[in-house]
Amino acid sequence: MTMRPAAVRLNTNLWNPLGERRALLLHGLGSDGTGWWRLASTLADEGWLVLAPDLRSHGASPPAADHSIAAMAADVALLGDGWDLVVGHSLGGAVAAWMLADPGATRHAVLVDPVLRLDTDQRRAAWAEQRRQVGDLDPAAVAAANPAWHPRDVARKVLAARRVTPDVVDAVFEDNDPWDVTAAASHWQARVHLLAADPARGGLLPPALAQGLTSPSVSAQTVVGCGHSIHRERPDVLIEAIARTVRVEEGRP
Image (tube, rainbow, N blue to C red; front, side):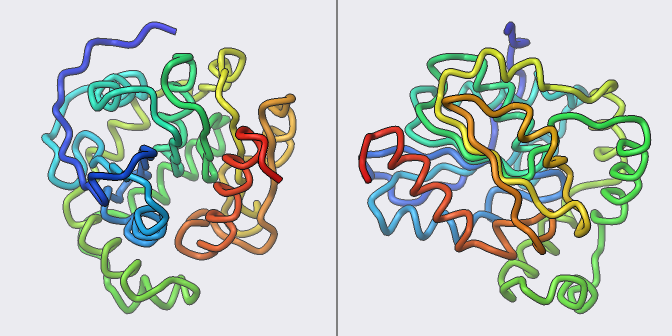
């Protein structure tokens, strides 16, 4: 799959720069790299170097005109390849899915409720919801809507949302119409695990789609009762999924 030339140098957040194994974490729409604080800290404590960029027009990265998944993936590609692990949530999961078409991108990947395909109704609903999740959010309202989140998750989300304008949300949806990166899956060579949130809780990866993508190197699970932000609501599930994915590929029990 051909990527467009990158035009944006991304701001990055780095944990444990001397780590031997390298992990890349990609955030979702309206967030930024610091939203991975808990997973990044856990991986760093286990000896991983962890890099979490702010995608274009997010966090401290420059604003840009093109918000296609291809352009975002090209930005991330400038950060290097040969990662031992890539984790992507939501929009970041779609970017990771595109990147995985490059056989040298990573050995392992866990995609956290990635937005791989949206039909017309799903696209319209997700667009409206994401517009509500940027700008000046009320911390108390965010906490009330997400009682399982750590207070730091609430704080990081509120701070990140302030740096994303509604027109960026509009551009992401306008520049990815139709929204469908599932064709990239036929080119994946890494071991990939798909974590789907509960559709009844706002999950954006339909379990049927996830199961349809499974293969000897692609596995899938649905986290029943968990909302879209699995890394915030059930960090234990994500950490176990990462450990299992890496363990299987390395042939460890």
